[in-house]
Amino acid sequence: MLSVDNIEVIYNDVILAVKGISLKVPEGEIVTLLGANGAGKSTVLKSISGLLKSQDGKIERGTIEYRGKTINNQSAENIVKIGICQVPEGRRVFPDLNTHENLIVGAFTRKDRRGVKGDFERILGYFPPLRKRLHLKAGYLSGGEQQMLVIGRALMGRPSLLMLDEPSLGLAPIIVREIFRIIEKINNEQSISILLIEQNANMALNIARHGYIMENGRIVMDDPCDRLKENEDVMEFYLGITEEGGKKSFADVKHYKRRKRWLS
Image 1 (cartoon, rainbow, N blue to C red):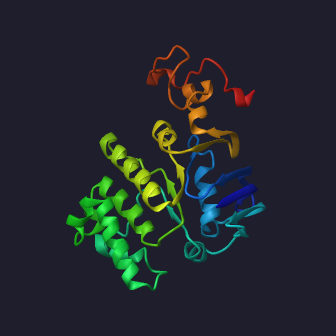
Image 2 (cartoon, helix red, strand yellow):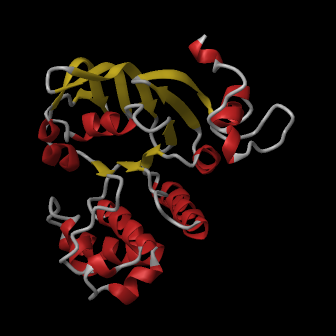
């Protein structure tokens, strides 16, 4: 469905943030992109969704294809119309609009009123807490409810490809598990392809089929998630598991015993 081929992204004509990465998202699958803060993951999503221009960024070289058509540098509104929706990190709700209005905004490209109404009810089925908050301003929702709202708002655009940027950010573990359960359910029931950026590597690798690891603007490893979970570097540096099978303590995280093999 989506093919990113050797793209380089530069900000302000000076800062090279993404250094020739390639990745693919097959139809109907969940793919995860992992990496430390500042690795360039969010920039990759913005390149796909057309948001680079608003931040003085541009694709310097390489191509992005969606269903066989090049979409480099198209406007964000055109990207949404062809079926790609991004949920940015930080729960970007419209705080002065209520929950109902936030959801309806997500359908701004659609003209099928009956379909919009049906999708609205379907989304409330995925996220039952929102039904009780329809007339409450979004700024007063809890963090978990806001995350449900922004995912639901993106689904109102009826995307074929949903891109999620750090959906677990700042949420309690029990809410994170529920959010990921719903993401997996949406993928299974609607066959929506999902490109997932996530710091919680364990959760991401458990629901995705294929994973990419990004560091310093480059893809350093990719494999099916079952194999990534067994890789010694991924286990130590992303899952916090030592070769002896124990968990690393927080105090040890910054003091690695060896270099990552992909940096050798």
